[in-house]
Image (cartoon, rainbow, N blue to C red):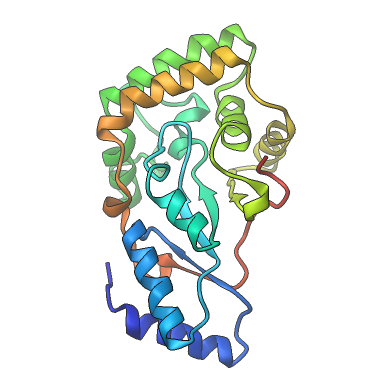
Length: 233
């Protein structure tokens, strides 16, 4: 991952002064890097980032202890993505040896598939899903609904900080269903509690922010960030 902060953010400021965008964000940087970037921009009089895009969901909470306090300190909004944990909350995946569709996000023939498998395909995550599923079923909730209602009502995301939830879907019907679920209220206490227990199962193997990485283009969220506005309690 590129670390030439001075060159990168000097170029960002130059583009800003040319009127190319109004605001920008960063993605997948560690908390100390965020602090360094903000300090560098302040020292040089450059435009500062106002949004941070990162992975955050009921089974991936490593951003909570250090990154969230850092972002709050500098007034940077959090734009969450992968609320369904890379598709684990769709109910399509249940074991390490199961067959996956060709071209799917967990297909080992693709670079993306290899990355997703490294992050999510292990006994810890499948044990966590096995813990959640019966409780969700008992409360007549789909796994997708559980994940989306958690991120909207039980996570650290807050509307007053400008936080946003980024969602994706493979069809219009899936998108509509996700939006409906996001409009619903907090989860039953029993479900929220089991999600906390599931997180403790995967915590030892959950990907750290420093391990996510990405290209410089993936780390820069310029100007118009695609988001679903209005969600975040």
